[in-house]
Amino acid sequence: MVSLRKSSFDLTEHVGDLLSPLLPANSSILLGLSGGVDSVVLLHLLKRLSLRCSWQLSALHVHHGINPQADAWAVFCADLCALYGISLQVQHIDIAPLRSLGIEAAARKLRHAALAQQQVDFVALAHHLDDQAETLLLQLLRGAGVRGASAMPAIKHRANAPSLIRPLLSIPRSILLEYAQQHSLQWVEDESNADDTYPRNFLRHRILPLLEQRFPSYRKTLLRSAQHFAEATELLNELAQQDADGAISDNSLDIKKLRRLGIVRGKNLLRYFLTAQGAAIPDSTRLQEMLRQLCNARQDAQVCIDWQGWQMRRYRNHAYTMPTLPLPVEFTIMWHGEAEILLPPPHGALHFKNAIGQGISVAKLQLGIAKIRSRRGGENIRVDAARPQRNLKNLLHEHEILPWQRDLLPLLFCDSNLVCVPGVGIANTYQAQSNEAGVVVIWRADLNTR
Image (cartoon, rainbow, N blue to C red; front, side, top):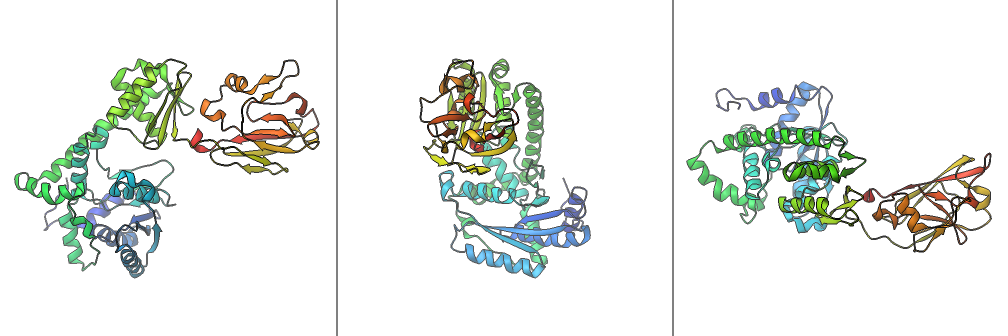
């Protein structure tokens, strides 16, 4: 733990010493700027350090539109960044679709989503030691496990998103206030921070001042605990990686191997699988019920478990997870030779690739009206001249097309004849012969149907 004695502590040097080994010269850093004192202090620090370390600094202000002062806050951030010569992006978000999560949770989720979409190397956040202590206590009061109790990491590398850095995480808020006053910084105050009906504010204003009277070093102690939980989480992740070897492939989880692990390791692997798919992690009770249904259901059972906008499905001893699927829709679209046709959601898109001696005979298609249609039921197709006509339902089953994708599968007709089932087969009388112009049909399923 760094010494914070006023006689020896320099906040700028502390942040510089922390970030310099982690952020190479010319790194692009985007600061999440709310306009509050914490982010204003970090902006001031990064501005000073960026000149020394050759960092490219910018900022993003997320406009939630919740508070009547939201427009004024955005103007304040714009004026401050203009004063510093820093590029600022103001992004408006609507929390209404996620309001069921609660205002705080919805705003946080959308704010992090906005930051994750930025094309930069690093996203800097101004969380400090008091935030860390509050987060840990809130997680424990919600019954979080070791992952949740790990609270916030100082640096977090993410696939397909900028790395997160929190250079103030070991600094108490009192030091930030002193720095702001010393440098005559201006900031905005969110009056909702005084509303103790919010759980975090209740802890901050009612509980933690009492705790500090009896345990003055509680912030450092809770930070140490969070670090212990983070180490335990690393061990659990390493164990899950070992268990995942041979159990997770092609976005699916082998149920037989999951069952052999037992309850505790099975839940650990299930969490790892869900995290790898980008899914929300259910609470412990729901996770244990998910494990029970996956492992104990009959092999032919169509298990479907819903939670927080996600689904877990089981098919032929494998589990799959995906965002909750919208219902398929009925459609008919004429095809006039386009290279790509976007289908109504959630049916994805069809791509058409010209070929010689492959795919569908172009000459045969030109004899009728080509159209793309959704499944209606009762379709039949003969893909092999030596075999009889087959019912499409049975053919999809034989080709192991996932059940939830079958009703989403688009079909290509010529007049009333079923010509092509993408990924399954082409009617034998429409197959391109050698040296004949053909077209290959490729279905790209909606990402939500994987």
